[in-house]
Image (cartoon, rainbow, N blue to C red; front, side, top):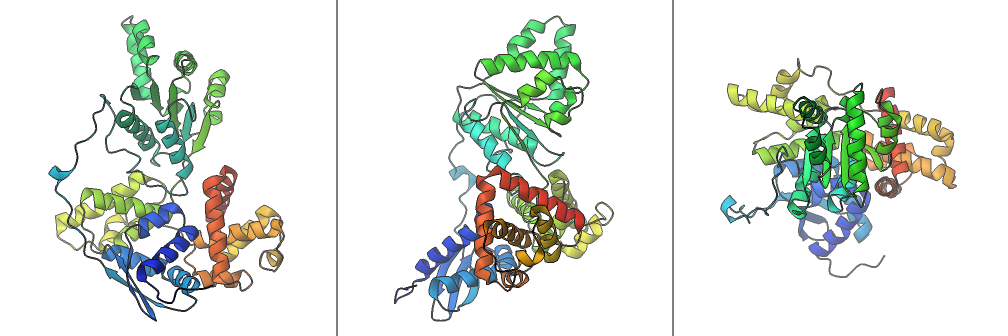
Length: 448
């Protein structure tokens, strides 16, 4: 590879950052490198500017090896890497910010629940993309959109985000968000007060109807009957319907077959519990937006490792730690967090899986042998499982790129970068690959 005689810091960072973007998923890149810039470069040292101590420590702990490999690929020689904190431009006062766009009355919608405030990870990327597509083009992308997943993973956030987005960008459209309980109560009250026609006319007139927690229609035959007709009326009029549930339609007991089939007309997508990196990003967002001062970044990592299945519990755990620190005057560090959470979340996070466990389960899933996975064969039926196993080793363990390469027949770190980059891209583009990785991740976590 030919390199320019005079190597500029900006030019090198442009090359290195492009390689990082290819090796990491887009959200990870944005989280940690969007505010990183080149400061200087000489024969043996490349200096990068980062926005704060937290970012510097995280990059030093997780990405230094990857950056050095990218520098070597770009320049053909080894460079030391130094991270320095850049002086930030002062944030303009709130009065200097532009006024919000005019919007229709969105009663019951939380203005904080937007697409911008939703932290994207591998566990929710597809659901986020589907919800955004619906918000950008109601009744044209996916209709109906059905999002399911356990409590506290962000389903309600996405429904509110759709409503907020439409309110800001399509003010001519009428939007209504209701819980299934509200729908049921409205229906019962309309029957009692003999205003059922008003109920029908109201719910069938919205351009976008968002119904949260439709699993509560279970065992309510009369409600299902009414919702069936509401659904048909909206759908036939070319209006958008978005629903959430804690389970897929096929698992909602007593749901009428004709209603279940209509739920399946559009797109059904799930949200899974977030991985550790996404949980840390969620806490970083909370710290930023709530103006919380966390001197020790390991506090966020510790809290994220303790609470893995529910975002509301995750944020609540951090709130407990912050409140205890404020009330007692104790410094907010990992020791304090351990004391506060030991009784609330005593189980903590299980130990990270081993690369051997990952290889074993990938081999089992694809019907190949360990010696094939780590050998030299390059046929597609071996290369693809090998790349998946490398990707999972990078995502689920703390192993460095060279260490992962050693477990796969002594391969170079650049081979691991290529594999993780390719699988990360396929996850974004191909739902079947996303499902495969989710399935294997669940098996690996159960096996460890």
